[in-house]
Image (cartoon, rainbow, N blue to C red; front, side):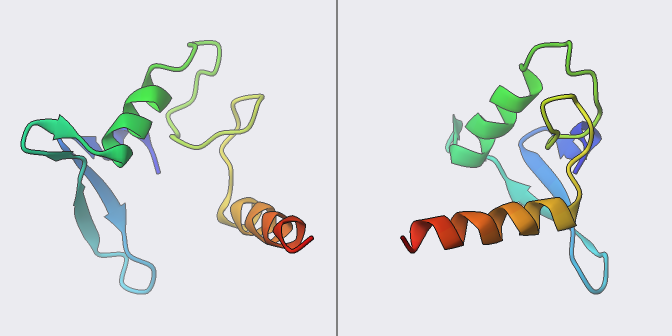
Length: 81
């Protein structure tokens, strides 16, 4: 996902199989929801991380889907004990 995918109070996300773009609301009744607050924090991060992507590693490079899956799997293993 890129910063360009943020459109006002919506985050545009491509669905897996069809790549159809859906809009996820980031605000309810004028108040940002947890996604809206997270996106706000990501956009406000230090400019030394100069990337158009929302999810990046410490050096500012895009985190791939595979990298996210691996980290998720590692976290699941750790949580089991």
